[in-house]
Image 1 (cartoon, rainbow, N blue to C red):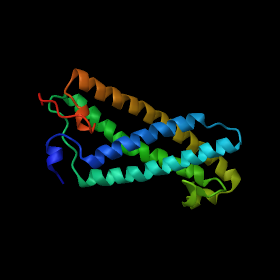
Image 2: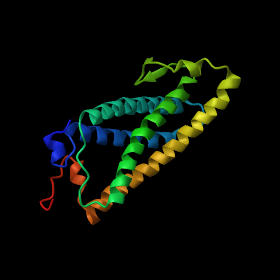
Image 3: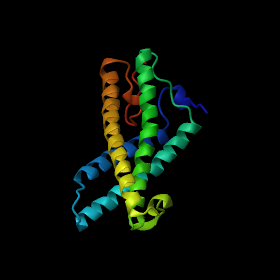
Image 4: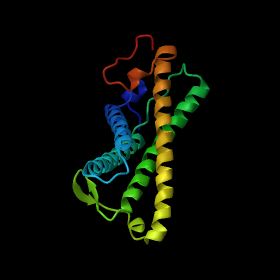
Length: 193
């Protein structure tokens, strides 16, 4: 479905809002993860509960973002971008659509190994994934550690992808065709476009 917003080169308001809320939550999530430690304490349990709730919120918002993406065609990339830059931008966006849910699903899997229920903002309504919680300890721990490693590797990849995304947007803003106005709600389209 196309609309006048996409034809003008700007993203829809819903996409802009989801983009920035998810971005802030991902950065928040990384800060929480760095602060989490191996020791058992009430503070660590609170950080873990916050990490789980923020992660599940990102998962829900990412599903909403994918639905909006399926409903509305995004605006085309600026014509002035070189072909290789367009390809990299498309690969980067596709990587976000794969990495974010994959990281969140591995986190949910890790949480499903625990004997406690998965709490979502303090309410124990979020289901555990049954195939993980039913494993015997000798089966579960090696799998847990593999999933934990995959979760950490993908999180590192997401951090690098996020840095490249920001660097690319800033590079285009100041060295190539202006792009930030397409995703920043307070910027207007430059008159030279």
